[in-house]
Image (cartoon, rainbow, N blue to C red; front, side, top):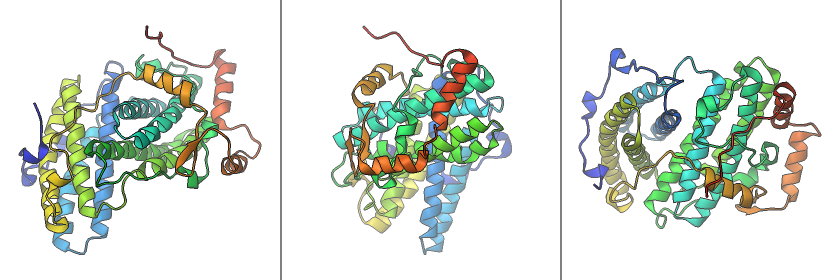
Length: 391
């Protein structure tokens, strides 16, 4: 049945505050949960964090105190939602295991978005990015085996292959080549706007994760690998945020953020296998419906248009975490050697690319290559996880 969040009633805003007991969620079982439950948690945490950051930026540019107060009220609830979601991750999970889960989520979410994206230019942007996360997953899986002597399968199951992607050392590009052309808000389909905002939020969360956890490692190679891949995550945020039309005003952006949260919570409510977690998605969807109503009122007041003029008449089919192994394998065959040039793509190593490589590498073997060397020396072979080819 079609679900139009603009026509649904949620929990009134003054009834959304929760006490400590309600926020004290039970973490998922790291050994027995569906790996995609962990991915959904990471994705929702990302969109809640993006919503909070955006609301703060809007408040800093809004001269109306009453509007700032209204934003603060919604933002506090968003902060409670973010804490409840993020605290589903278990404390017994190591930092490297959480890292593997982040890369797992990035691979399968971006691959799914690429498969479903109707716009050819945006689709290419997602196809390009997913091959870099494939390689990050491979590098961290080898670091995990080196340091913790465990297989990445413990975290990601056998749902996603662990194989070399576009080599991480070839991902260091001149910053001017990390900026894409934006979609055109008056022409682009609503689904494309949801895709761009979702992938941008997940990439931003992954970047922030690297900023915070990289220095907590003792092992020099681990610290260096997080630093190297953390710089690529900065490039990824450039890559994806530039897809969003900068001509959208603050109120349209706010509307898109709240609608996207409804979309993600509804998607995951429909596909979640863990009963406790699904109940949390349902509760948060009911809250987000009210946040969307507030955003819609502000949009009508300050933009002058009706939300139906920019939003989809109903939610698209659910965003689904599922295996994309065949799709990714095909991309590796056809696009592994692609780099960026300006706002387009190229296969040759052009002058700016080569200059960036010289500046960053300075003749040294990068951490992303040395981690494979070290695991081969310790474990006897590099770590890979490959599935049988589909017939």
